[in-house]
Length: 307
Image 1: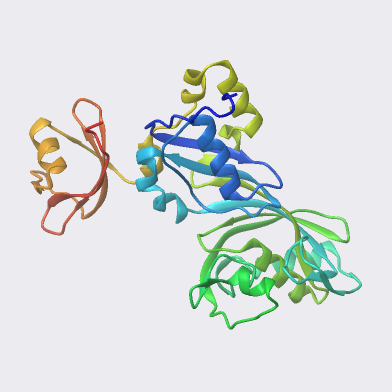
Image 2: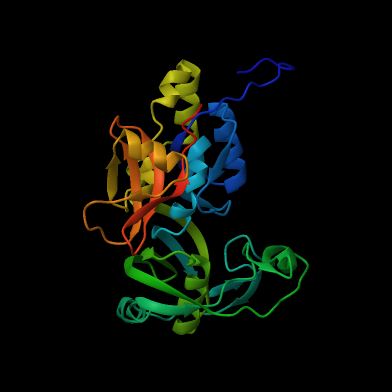
């Protein structure tokens, strides 16, 4: 624990922390706690989780923040609890109850309905979201009692499985694309069943290939820091882990220098256009490059290798 009154000394440290976000913290609150534990000068999270939600929240430190957008757009997986028969103002357990209805539905009906949500569907974003309308967050407008028109968006539900149903609470496992709102999915399921529903609990089990089995709780991070900062640093994933969906190119010394100085590199072998992870022949991760239709490689987003 840092002494009271002593200024905190932040440091340049690069990597990705897989946090198992606890219940009750906003994503930003969790981010700031992790940043302080690492004494990191720069940090950002990849995909918000509401305070009532738990689970995998990748946090990028230092140069990793340059590549956080590629995790923001990744597929995600959730375990969700949907309380049937009760609708709320916010679509989740934090809102006020709007309406209650009897639930007279069996397992077969639920299983049949869930099939209708699998695939590419349209979803209207909830008012309680961080989307903006005329420069103001929707959740701010919602808290003022205002409603605005929201255009439906195309999303993809890759997989939707019923984990359990006790006659009132439906437990589901959802694998989905970016931009999917699970609270809206819960509401839509309740609406289609004719009894209404709200999201009563939510846990994110994975973001892209980052799985909850490899995530650390806040208590675990605090314990590691208390032992030694090097033990905390040891759990960091490399920056390039956020980009493993892209093929890698190894660049020789001359080509590495050209890329870092903003020059294009002509590739001798025929290569498909697209994004590539770049690594030097010495094993240093350089960043992200892009191959043009003409076969030239240029820098897309590079690490600061000077420091």
